Amino acid sequence: MIAKVAIPRPVKDPFDYRIPQKFIPKIKKGKRVRVNFRGSEILGYIVDIAKESRIKELRTIQDVIDEEPIFDNHLLRLTKKVSQYYLSSWGEVLDAAFPLGLKKSKIKIERKRIDKRIDKEEIVNSKLDNDGYNKIRKIISDRIFKVYLYHARNQEDKIALYLKLIKEAFRIKKTVLLLAAEILSVDILVSRIKRFYPDDIAIYHSQLKTNEKKDNLAQIISKKARIVIGSRSAVFSPLAEIGVIIIDEEESDLYKKPDAPRFNTKKVAELRAKMLKCPLILGSITPSIESYYMAKRRVFSLIRERGGEKHSLEKVEIIDLKREKDIYRRKGLLSYRLKDAIDNSLKEDKNVVLFLNRRGFATFIRCRECGYIIKCPRCKKNLIYHYDKKELICHYCNYRRKPPKICPQCKKSYINYSGFGTEKLESILCHRYPQSKIKRLDADIASQKGKRYKILSDFNKGKI
Image (cartoon, rainbow, N blue to C red; front, side, top):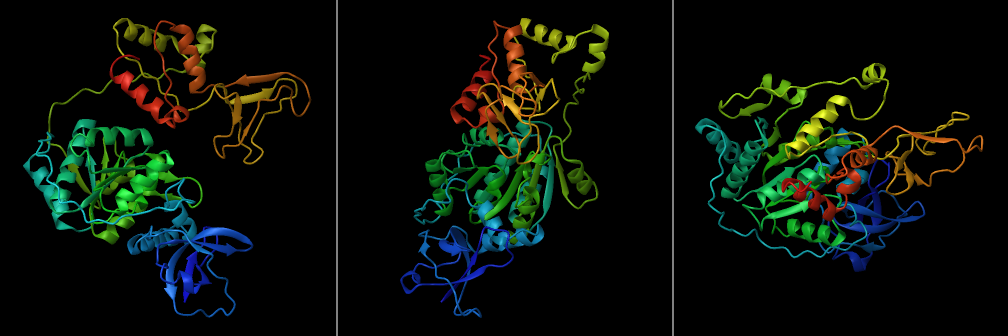
């Protein structure tokens, strides 16, 4: 017998491998196997099984990794469609679809039927009128593919609609796949939905610990979990009997995977929903221009709450820091207007949130003598100085090195650190407001689960 194995390399077709007699009872589509490929031992994915091959001399499968298939027929078809749509290799897409950190692990799965548990009868308020609520019931019960754009007024109404969709999906014995733009958003959604369905949720993202990933994946495959909440990679989660796919904050660019194999999670979710003949809900308070345009052209169906109180838009001020520097003969990250706003908020015992779209302490490291700029040797991007780690880091490929004491080019010691990121902003604020408790929450901190929860919890309690 022959196994067709998709290799996670930029190659076009699956490769044929002979199945040793001892492995024939274990071989199934969707399992991982260890094979020799161009002189290296790697893990590949069985995508088909055949009686014979047109190639005479074949290498044999060395080992079967999984006890049960990780990818069912549906996910194999989906990943193949994604590879064809984005011109990637099938093996690379399967590798991207497999949970990070588990590629070398054996996953033991106990298959069980879905529990027919009784949902908690808890009323969730939203501003949807009867027509809107009936539309939700129809969305789920029709079991047809259609894309809906839900334009919410606020976070509360958005969560309320998601809970109604979950309740309706459960009513017809279906499951729910809920995608979030980033891991922090996953945490927020889990905390809100867990109050209603504490035993039904599996979390799916790359920053879980290995044991947590194994447990959550086993819950999904064994059908113990009826709701999967996760980030971009969760679009490939092996959740069965999906009744609705929801994409929260659909306008976010974080749904686009920038490295190979590249894909847009929204498009993959659309392909999956179309294959499953289930609705796809795009939820947002500020929809993307593309989605809103599609809704206006009636390609997507638009869902809105009934009219409520009209709130005036908050006043937005744009401060030109370059102009301020010319007027006040000073430069700095905080404008006078921003300082006043922070001072007034602190006097009134209010919280303050500042957003900055750069990590690190200094974003431009340059020799003042010869002008040499310290760049990443791999991708030629500027290296960013991280004060906490005392390292220069490339934010594109994660290359790291110690800061140089002398210029690599002219050997002089006139190294200048300029530019700013969240670390420098934190330092400036701590110096200006020593009596206030100030915390930084960026991707460096967010990767540490305990710290992330502590900061969010303390902020909600007014301790920060």
